[in-house]
Image 1 (cartoon, rainbow, N blue to C red):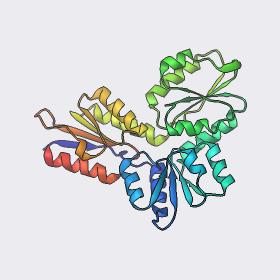
Image 2 (image 1 turned 30 degrees about the vertical axis):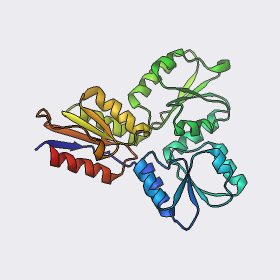
Image 3 (image 1 turned 135 degrees about the vertical axis):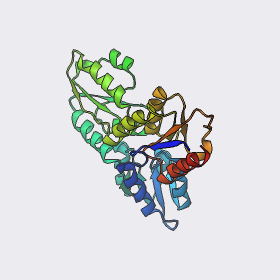
Length: 282
């Protein structure tokens, strides 16, 4: 029988669990309950909420058309303008923004008056879009070491560097090293959440010692993709799946140990299904 090493940090983090629990608590087919964007990046969870009557609003235009109901603000956070809009319209809302993300909002809201905010992250990710929406002056986003090397602040302003909570920790360290050598003043705030850092460290450690690695998470989940990138660097037989039905890994006689980890938005029951499948088939 194949040996299975399951990451202790796999699955829901504190912020995601709090957001999901609140969304299911509020779900009621007889009431108008909405989420502004997917409450977390997991299609299975969003489907379950939909079946319980929670409706998904994808755009600000849809939000403007609301006249009643309650809006759940996603765990990734939203721009300040969205909260202001809901207040102006008198629409009830429940903010389930992850506390670690909310901390970044507070930092950039304060620092952006005097400093140029630079965010290490994915500019298209809703968390980063939300962070930018709390800056009083336009923020810049960088994703690579090359962009960090080329970066020069506008008008010679001092810089405040923060990070998307799910950014690759090793990559952020390298970007920090580059910024610390710049000629202008840079204040650095490591805003990668502890859960993300622990997830990534444990995933790499497991992947280095197994014959095959399985990363479970939604394809839209930033932290899940980062886990896959990290694991595939050290374990060639790494698969990134959303559910057990997507698993193509087969026992070919060369697999004695399989590692399993999962992104912070992956429900425990999906992890259990994958683990049971590996135990049964390998």
